Image (cartoon, rainbow, N blue to C red; front, side, top):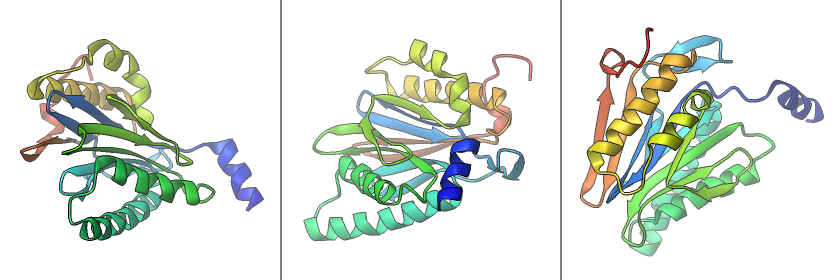
Length: 217
């Protein structure tokens, strides 16, 4: 066990992805690229969907070890389904994020995965939460993650503003993902986006050749 921990400290965690979530006026947008890689070197899939529905109006994005993330999400779905039956109402977004936090914290020595949770509920409306490696939980109006995020912090800081319209937020998210995918060699494919509001859920897929271009690629 000690050897594994030391190795992980030396090598770090290769996330090989770009994920994003942002709150707008009345809803939230969550999205990601679609490229999966092994060790940040070999592209194993160009079409994986990293935006996973965990309940009716709650979605999460994953970064890090795909196997770890899928196992955590599967367990979280079970907990939330059971919770909604017990409470006889849909779970709150914070409840979903807290379930992911507990699973990550209790297994922090074994897991190498982080999550973004975004959704809408009747108590607090649109919300975004981040569960980082080790199980830290924080709430933010906009957040980015994965290896591609290092290229777009400046863009996100400059262009995100509270109370954007749905179309403005979709364009903001699309531009941010396109910029990251254009610079990060282990992010790419298509842009998967989900818009969550009180009225429902809308899925948007932007093919790679339809993404905006900001420089010669």
